[in-house]
Image (tube, rainbow, N blue to C red; front, side, top):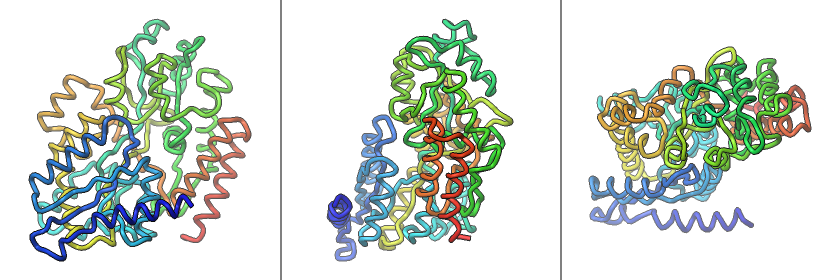
Length: 424
């Protein structure tokens, strides 16, 4: 019932933005734009301002932002709208949705719109780490926009109270446990790593640090049951069960920053996209660092890409491409980084006066950029939602104690293998 109601609502909303451009040359070209709002901070105001500024510079185009909920809700709505024949012209969806969108024939390659030398320079301007989840089969399917890595935040006051150097975060897994033990006391955990919302993403950082790769580049194989992957999960589980420095069971994604602000945890792992949120709400000095190393440093990239609908009219697609280029200019990408905490997606953004000044005043902003050297592609496969759910289910089973890490990963791999076999 809920799906039918949404389908009717989506069709009506999208139908409202399929416009008269084909009827009258004088009419504005209307471009609908799905955006996931549940990513923290006053994002809708920023996107509304982007839409109005873009329209002022392009008076022949009308941009209609449609705020579609979480990333998970937005991909469901986008695919439902695609199947109903009235999809948004462009959407910001997870970079890891790329294979799913290709399999559904819901998007067109960005390369189709790259015609001039300037276009080619623009497409080559993004950080290579962010293009790992944007390209496959020799084509570019998504454009990096609000991209991130996972970083460590710590409360400098609590470090000082625990006898730790407030300017020095843990550098490796051993120190992370040692520091967390000193920081744990009644009402205060040493560390929190969220395990709801995006557990596979947080876990992938542990796996990378253990020396593991979770999937192949073709997106048709996973390696959830490899020894290094199990080792990574055993370490995460040990933080609560053995060392008792981390809350037991499932730690909520949405409340972890709040726990940090309220001094209920001294260290937390979360997205760089929370950086502005933390800066605005932490009533204490805090630090930001690359994640502690296991056998190596590492974080998956994360966040959203722009995609262009395959069912939109050619003129609307071209207008959407123009908007995407506009949003990802060096200056605008720099300002987006300042306003939200997401990583400016191209190196030349970091040379703009606004971002140079920001980093000078707030050096923590450069940590995510520097960590890109150690970043790998976020887990992404065909049937991505089902394959990541298989991993998420295993992670939560291990974290709640209903399965051992080894059994949990063996079961997750069996389910992922069943799903992906058809794609080989």
